[in-house]
Length: 131
Image (cartoon, rainbow, N blue to C red; front, top):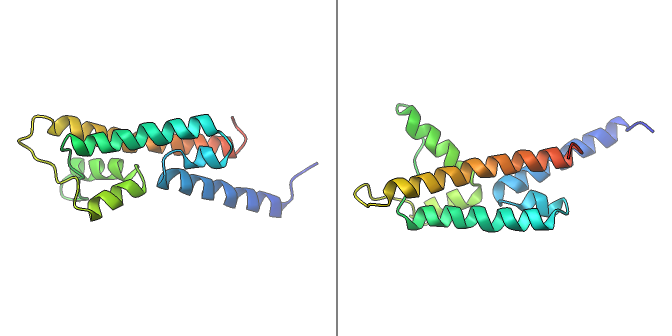
């Protein structure tokens, strides 16, 4: 039996909502798709990674077009979802360049965002029925 256009549109809308949830809260897409173990693992691991980056005095980078590497770091960190914007509004993530752990903190923050982007892609594939 073939899917109708309305079914495909509803499916596409559902897929994009899953992806939005997966971006906003790490692991939420997998939880909504019924993959509880993966969803909880991603939720705990990525949130802890983000918090570890803040604890290690990493910086939440601003988007500065004149400094492309800073802008790319900011986009990578934004991949972490709502936590990035909450931390920025709370004044966290100022980063102390003289701190011994500054670069480690930056690495944790950036990698947490990039890993969440991969988790969103995985949730997209599952929602599309590819996995």
